[in-house]
Length: 535
Image 1 (cartoon, rainbow, N blue to C red):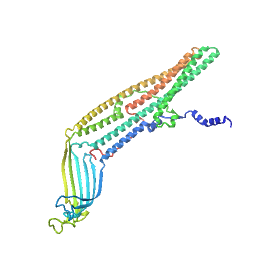
Image 2: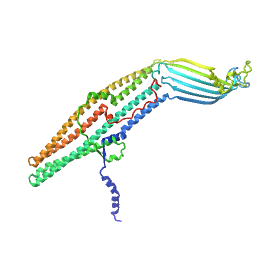
Image 3: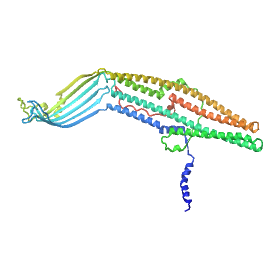
């Protein structure tokens, strides 16, 4: 093996990577519809906003959870001996106090009402054995079934924390939907602007390349005339200088096109390692001929008022603060609740074998109505032998209540601020519509003028080239006409791109952008909890 062998091996190993590195980027045709679709799927800002909408939906579901019934159950065994300081303690002979042991089970379900009240249904059953000589039943079965209602009459009647949370969650979901629509419209508009900017930048490159070709052709023509002796060597300096200047402009336009491509890619790609970053996007949509028309400003103002998501967002913020204002004012009221309860209790059992009352009783101390087991205890409930009913009012009056009054003042001021913010947003939307109308009309006029200017520049260049061929002018004037034509092409390209961008901005400002592109954002789903008063 010679000394050159290791170096040769290294070259062979690196050759494939060098070839790949030197390979030009792959051209990827891209239509405007494809660019929009990719942005709607991949754009990071849109994905974040969709997650915000999902969070808002979860917030509404969480608020609805306040109306989920709550089931409570417990069961336990107990054994107790209570010290009693009385000659009537019921303790058997030789004991300090009677002993009681047994089992108890409780079951209940409670529900928050849409009126701010609560209702609870409870039942219980217990079995006890006792050594108390005064207790008639041992073992005994005690049961109960009851219903309890607590309804606010002042504070929490019109709005309570649960209803406030639910209404705020629904408003927040509406705001999130509007925010998603706003961000979607902004992203779509940005993608379309970037798409047409890239197309215009590529056409600028083509125009600069054509100008370089014209300069090279003019330089070749002058060189031929110098060799023929019809022009001097000094006449060659002008086309050479112009050629190099145009090459510099070409390099600058290529850089601008690369920046425009990267701007579009940043809107379309979510992953920095996406292979498209190494590819060359080629806009494949050819702009259709456009006929500028004067926009209908008054009609657009009306549609913008109902379609712009910014206004829906501001209205949702105001609605939230209106809810908070109502709740804050409600908290300044005293608490007055209606409390009602009805229960039926049951009792049954067997005669206590240790019964030793201090006075004579009948031979059968256990009435037939309560003689039995658990079933007989529930039978007394069915028969309504031991009812328990109550109704009343509970009043709580915070003296001073300064915290609540201060909160109400803050909520009122915040609501006023939101009302003013909504007015400011409406005015800003109207200004945007009017500015977009002026920009669209101006862009249309510029496009018409640019087209006429380009056509005139083509005619002037053709005439100047014919005069140069006849020896009636110099290369300087030909180069000047070439520059004029290049600038006319650039001006037309810029005017066309600006007109398209003005139309995009007009659609965005009037709120019709998504509808015109047939793009639908995520629709709100009906809330699971019924509206107030319909639960």
